[in-house]
Amino acid sequence: MTVVPAQRPVRTTAPAGPASLTQRGSRTASSCPSCSSGRVTTLAMTLTDGTPVQFSSCHECEHRTWTHEGQQMPFADVITRATKHKA
Image (cartoon, rainbow, N blue to C red; front, side, top):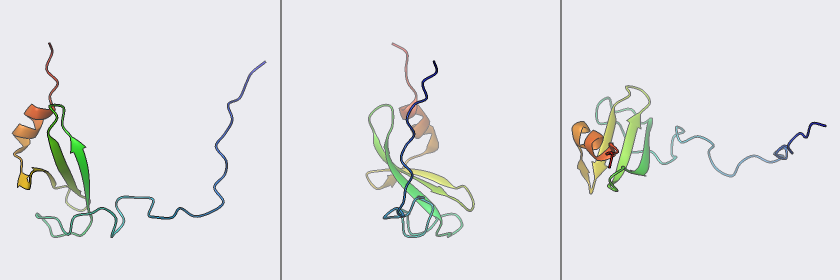
């Protein structure tokens, strides 16, 4: 006998907020520093070494930045801090 797992119930109401972070007005930075587009998603994240950063990505030109304590981090520093070192 095969057992089929229960499915999630069907949603009957619309979600309360936007379903995508790419929609205007949803957790986005004001504009892209490279192309001035308003379609920028910003997320808080923690790098492997424990450094808290804000990651921003433009949906128009794909410009990406990482900032820590209000200062933009060079990409090489992000990679160094995000690399897991073998013990």
